[in-house]
Length: 336
Image 1 (cartoon, rainbow, N blue to C red):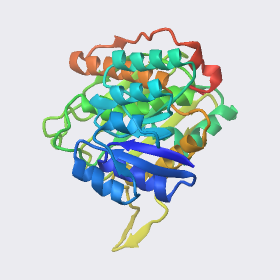
Image 2: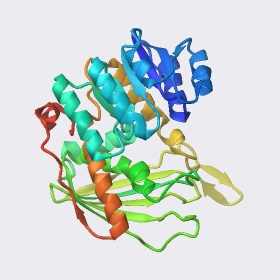
Image 3: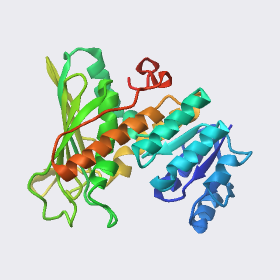
Image 4: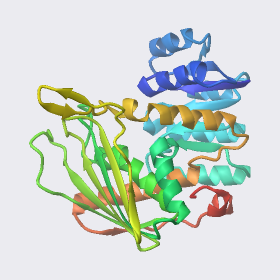
């Protein structure tokens, strides 16, 4: 039985505790911490877990074999580094850390430890539709990929959402997905600003990212975070001999009053709930984490940082990564 400590009892932390205790077998939650001790106590009461004064105490607890970090992004580096130092596997919700430099410190700590302990919560890789998309692509039946078109539309965003969050909270999912889908790095990015939406409320919305890949592909990513009508995720890959695209996720259509309609997911929880289940199930079952790595978290942070620069300057920004350590060699599965 894997004993898991959870740092962060907010919305995603509560959902992961529910997942770990009622969806995934072979796991028990033994420790919880949050800056809001009342929230931590309420979550702990559902599992019989102990409430700890802070995340470092959770990592250090003797009855914690592995750690799930769901706290505010600025705290991630501290808790992930503590878990690596303690030699405990750690699942960290994105971002791995809030700057490329902080992510690189985690990479260096893990390399010094000598084996992978860190997995980052990029759940697109665990979604049935995205995995099917990649299976068709990797089969070679429709030829080499040339371009990909993506759309990421939110009905709305919280009041605390800032212009840079369009990249760091939203587009970052496509940034990681693209690296995984095509097994190559992103070498440059440009962010374009079309006509602004009257629904934007001070946010630069929508925006269009153009990603240049090392294999000469181009990927465009439309981001609209005030689309109003629902949560809509789209993707289509143009290959030499055909295309492959994500299908609509809705299992039903409704005929009523002369109209044919199909429901649109309300938010990310509805669209990707099953992917979160698979993600944590596979993490808990793995002897060594084999999902998105600390290097993947670092690369996503570098690309996101470049995209934020482009959002501000409206110029193309080239991307340079540090030398990838052997621990994260792509032949080990980190990229493909």
